[in-house]
Image 1 (cartoon, rainbow, N blue to C red):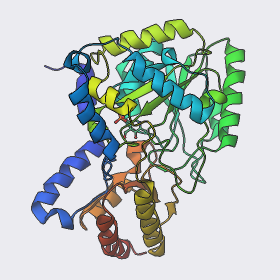
Image 2: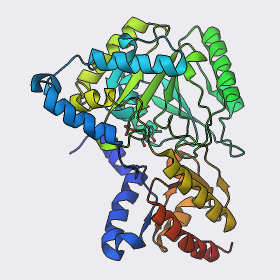
Image 3: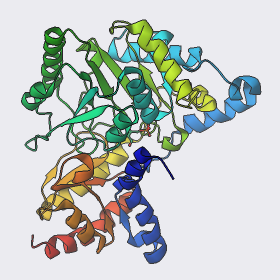
Image 4: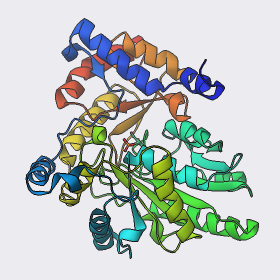
Length: 395
Ligand code: PLP
């Protein structure tokens, strides 16, 4: 018999993953060109050439013991040093290798942070809509996820509601910008207000409240939108980054956590993160990929590719009278469902071979998420199907 805790987690298994499996089944049944699978954030842009070339060169030039061996739990110091230097250049930070810990993607990063910070019953606040896996990550360490209801006017966080939810047992706040599922980038004004609320609450409760900035989509922005670098606004910030989307290598599982020296209990937090990497069974982030990524820190994904998908989809859907939030970043479009029940709408879409994820999975019913990190043909060919769907909903 599996554990009670896992019984719950299996029962609430990711809607997104379930959709993905269904998409594969439908592709076999109807042919892949006839299925419009917008369910998963699996980047369609290939990984940059630099990444492949770096791997080949490393395998040819670097001794196998170094490439394939164990290393410090925090990752190769040389790789961390390069990442720190790159962040310093881009964001004016003051990092060195002791401020970067290599992780198994953003998911691994969030889990080691939460393992490091949470006692049972501690609260972690996040803002709806949010990446649904946060629920599981927080539950992994017996924390409680507290959700600030969505601000459906512009999907910036509702900071008035937020302030009221902060309590002495609030240990951390997770924010994600550019946001999955809305594509919204939190403005500098939002970041400043959020930071000053947290500063004030830390003073009021004489506590440390850590801000966890989950930012796998930092590089994916349109029209030069600025994404504020959080450590500059709030001292107790930990940044969780991932190369999954920026280099299109989600299966390779690489990211890092940036831990500024200025945070409360820096030494302890740093050591605990490294130990958490080990005892959660990651041990260290994948070695070959660390070495390869260090050689292509300036490589960029083809943002124009996603931009064209975004524009075509947004224009196509709004023409059909669907109400959509225009994404400023990431590769997701959040669309209001013409019927109240987003699950029923996602089911209705399936009849037209369109797969989208109900907003309920992100704590925001009444919407669906459309992941447009697919081929341009998929976007273009889906529009007549969306037109049929719109008509069937009386739009
Ligand atoms: N956080 C957010 C907001 C995400 O959208 C994802 C993946 O889609 C992750 C974390 C996990 O990313 P990774 O594949 O790097 O673990």
